[in-house]
Image 1 (cartoon, helix red, strand yellow):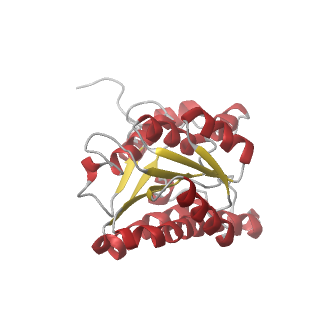
Image 2: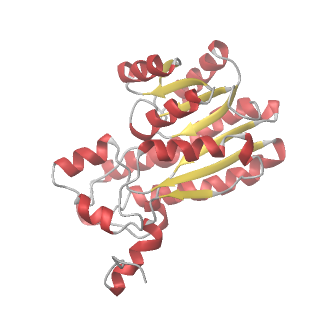
Length: 261
């Protein structure tokens, strides 16, 4: 890793779409050799071809396939210095009494356990070298009460584990941070908007900047956290939300003011 860019191997789980794909593009543009890791092989290969990287198929919920992929990545590309845990699934805002337990279990298995498992699998290889940087994609959903009774607690757990792993591995040179995206214009969110399941005007109105986050804005925050410029930062959770956390409580007072004063 150079002082001005990234020249190591970067693994992005969930790298075939959305925020993960944006991370692949930005990290590659800054010099990293990118391994796109996803369950969707064809799409992962498309992103890998686009960024000049390589694709691996693995499920973060499956320890054996994840460990095998890690071994192959290090054999094929070199030592992994950066891990971005972006693999995750979302859920609809159902009442707890209506949320199927198999849906709940799958969200926790991928979003929480999968993040932890990928961190452990790749840290096993980073620790002997005493260097590495991990960024977990959490969510503002993990920082507020929302009607997402599997997703929000799972993302809260990701924020918590970020601090736990940062303290655990910091003495051995591994930094662990999180980025908590706000409402981001990913294909998944855009599909929900197009189906009428999300009101984009309401999402924008409750953000201080009055708009959605773009995927590459999340990716640029990730690139900063894994860069030498963030060498003293570990255990942090960085919200990238266009000011949703700051602005949403203002609905109690009638919403944001539309003109300065």
